[in-house]
Amino acid sequence: QVQLVESGGGFVQPGGSLRLSCAASISIFAINDMGWYRQAPGEERELVAVIASGGSTYYADSVKGRFAISRDNAKNTLYLEMNSLKPEDTAVYYCNTDWLGYDYWGQGTQVTVSS
Image (tube, rainbow, N blue to C red; front, side, top):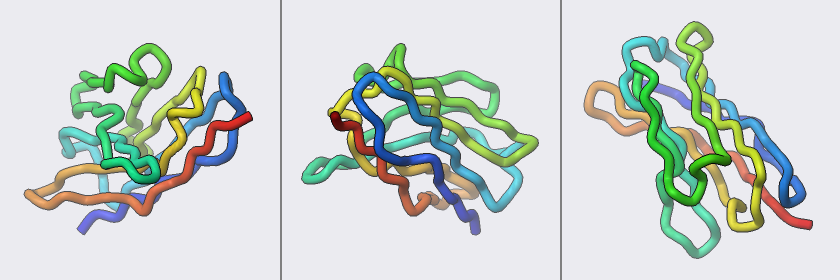
């Protein structure tokens, strides 16, 4: 069983920045992929970014160059640094990982970008 708890969401103006955190209840040292997804109202959940245990990363085209995913295995925490935020980035952001064949999700954190 893995618990994932996101934090760091909030309200920000266009062009602003936020840093999301996802704290895991177990050591993430041996976990391979960890990722961030988001879901806007009326839309399907979409992949934002993924980071492997070795540090390789993948980004959706819509966030490439603006968002940065990272992980601190010592703190069992996943991060998403979001810069140059746009109104279309407004969504609930979820942390995700797969561990021993099970899929785990956090409860989500709301990010709202508006002037």
